[in-house]
Image 1 (cartoon, rainbow, N blue to C red):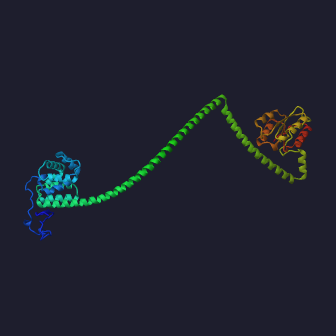
Image 2 (cartoon, rainbow, N blue to C red):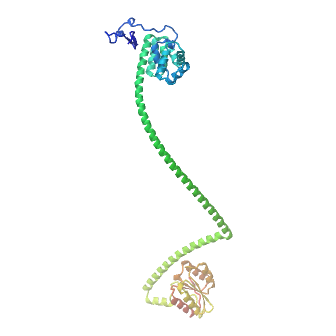
Length: 437
């Protein structure tokens, strides 16, 4: 340790003394006049230059106010340094150049004045050391603009020796704390770098998965687009075919006159046939009911009345009437409505045996009812087998014969023998027109 006192924050270390190696702490209670002489700040209103402040303050100023790259760039402007000069050599060289007024010291001073002009202006508003101290403490408490506050405080005209050493002690401890925090930050930084590397790896994996999924989805989208194009082409082909067939249909409709009316009539005819079939079934059910009731009545009626009924008109219903009788059917047309389809030939033979002409209509079961009108107009005698015709045919025959007065005989049974007996009975008596009510 040198013989002269070494200044520290708030006191001094005494020179080397083998008899008293401990620190002299009497300065804490010693009057101000007994403290070692410290360099006093110049009592002037002019701000001090960089080379005018104590030399030991140059190290904190250069280290805190200039980054290494910036310091290297400024020093290369005024001196020649090897490119591989270390950061420590740059720092010590710059600190040594600030002890006296030199080109580097002037360049650094101008740079500091220009950079911290606002902070210097704010500190210049305070005219006393206490005011400068308060501003410095505010800067250290906030941690904002600390290098600018350091430069503005040490160069302030009101900064005395006590404030200079107080600021020196504060900045010295702040640098230690910064170093400790930097080491902790380095550990944290290393952990963050490791975590960042792991996250980057995971991000790369996820990016690869996303890229694969994107390619897969793009392939599916292309396939769906191609399929959609095919479907649109098929739809266009179907539309063209439909348009062509529609045009051909219109041409065919125009070529066949009254086609739509015929189609409407055909639909009406089909509906009428369906209704006729239903009514025929209903009529058969009603006829069966009538037969059942008549058999029941015949069983309950007296025997003589049954015999009289059977001899008066054999093989006929209660509604059957004898409308014509003649000695011979020569030249007369006999229309048979209904009957069994397998017995039509026998019916024809029975009529032609008596010399008549035979006409037949199935009563609307298969043949159209429109043909029955022409058959009724051509017939001289009508035999209606009521049990084997439709309901509409029954009423049409009855109303037509009643209106024209044509002889009509309604027969209940449709057997060949019953038809033959009816023909024989008609040929044995004089023809007589009877009402069909």
